[in-house]
Length: 472
Image (tube, rainbow, N blue to C red):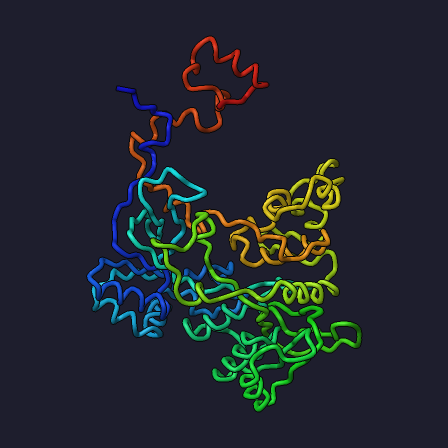
């Protein structure tokens, strides 16, 4: 009988603490309906939803681009929980159907066998609430995770008051916690028109809609409804900059998309309604796809981002007026100049050899990938996990390389796909069997030395042959 290799990952993967027939992520209308239907069929069902998100996370634009426009209600967890529950009556039906409903619980990692992983003994989902993290086993996974905003920046966008349309709608309808009185909307597609009508229905003044095209891009019926309200639509215009004070945005400066005089519009909120992307971070990070075991429902299944040429047009129009010091990544304070120059953020040292590099020099080795730029500049490494800068980075790389945006991917997602406190992860199931033999995995000089020769006279010869400090 062959002895078991204690250095292999066999036996070192955590086992699920609980198992369900069906796990549903996202307790919106689609997710709740899926959970109720599964329970009605006799399945054991877990329904998790990250809302209400902690006020601190919402302040960093997680999970949506809230733009610093959350009222003080966001710091009252009990009030937020009650509001979220009351705004979705189907949750009560889910409870009555026997669904295990867990609000304020994030799904931070999906682990299934596929192209990116082959060693999982069974599929698992990592979840965490304010107190603990755990692994959940499942037979079927339903993702009803909705959509996220496509964010493109301009001068002054990194101040409170610049918000995404998804974040705007969530604060208004899910949380009743939006601090906005007068909003300027960027984009006249369906999303922009619906956002304008939503704002008006809640008593928020709409200062106007900005559109780079020469015609309204959304459905005619919505455009007619909005036209009847008298909201001005500035066609063939773009945002130049946002100016503000201690509370954030006070004025938006707009200009014709080609050339012409600038106009200042008073507003306390600028809502980006350029487009959305499906919120499929869990799938993307796992390298998995929808199939027999995983199903997408709701907005994450039906949402498509705008056409690449539409995104490129907005990016070029906004970038035309953006100075080099315009922030791209708010979390890491990476500017347009830093990104194009492939420089680390200003809070880090820039040795002479780093200062000499640029995107042009990097392109000598082939097209640049956003993941490569992320490692060199830290753009996308902050607490928002790239939600605000991922699309901007891809657009800038496409423009600087002279490539169509369709050929430039966005930066990869990695688990955990939501910020999880280290204090929660520290209290993890790690028994003696998991830790046995891991001394050869991290940070010791023999890291790439074959296990069989560690501690023998052959070890030194092997390390020397590899150039030192290397193992296999």
